[in-house]
Length: 375
Image (cartoon, rainbow, N blue to C red):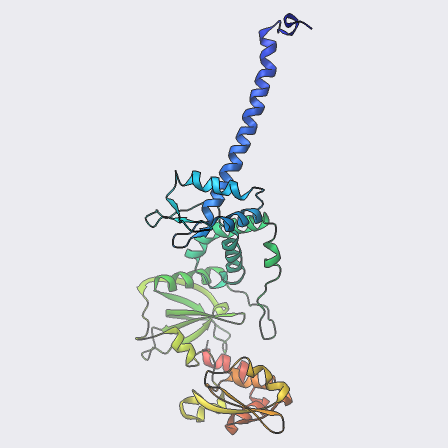
């Protein structure tokens, strides 16, 4: 075949395959560019501000995220990105990279796998305790975390192998009016008073209260609001179960928190422990009381690993039983917990504590829950 025969007779006909070839090249280049951009954003998302991150670690994280690249490619990416972004490297071996101290805060459309796992666990376990104003900002990150984990090769093996289990009998959480919950959380976040329609545990009809929200506490499947009533001159801190709110309106007036209130101090003092009728005759209703517990060895073994208090001591007796001395708040919760040991609990002091454990007629756990919260 001669050169003349190879020459296209119609220039327009010749243009078609040439254009197709150029189009294919452009498409391939476009795909390559998109892949490079996605990879380099992922590289940037691995970097931190105050900590050096090694190139090997970045390479491993990208491999877990599904990028089939070499360590050398990561190194080239970092050097190229350093020309356009405020990132820096050190002279260590192996080399590390980080954001410069004066770099503006970055909001990258990717997160690394560790962050994705953390956001996934926050969504699974803490959304009930986060106010709407924060949740609204976090939902895009929750979605991003789910998509990041979906594309991961191995991270789901961690998500599928980690759970939080209650130490008590699992219960189904009661229904909570979502508008009421959102308004309570909003008022607490911005420290505003609320006007609430609430049904007390010992009443069948709802009453209206103006409350000063103080704190939110989740106890088992029940979420409680700590608050004071504006019509209470003594400003007694009361517990309100969220599922008993029928409606809540946010007021413009600022909420008043009792002077020197600290939530941790309140809880440490047994504020959510719920009192027991028998302990009211004790000084300070049994708070910070020294007790002695006598267990069989098998029953008391767990307390040698998980203490009731920091001052707890354990004595192994000659008959192979255990005696535990500790200081705790005497509450209905303690009584209910000790009953769970059955015959493994041989004795308890003070005698009033052992009497409460043996005397099931009081049914202190549920009864005092209602009594303490009063609502």
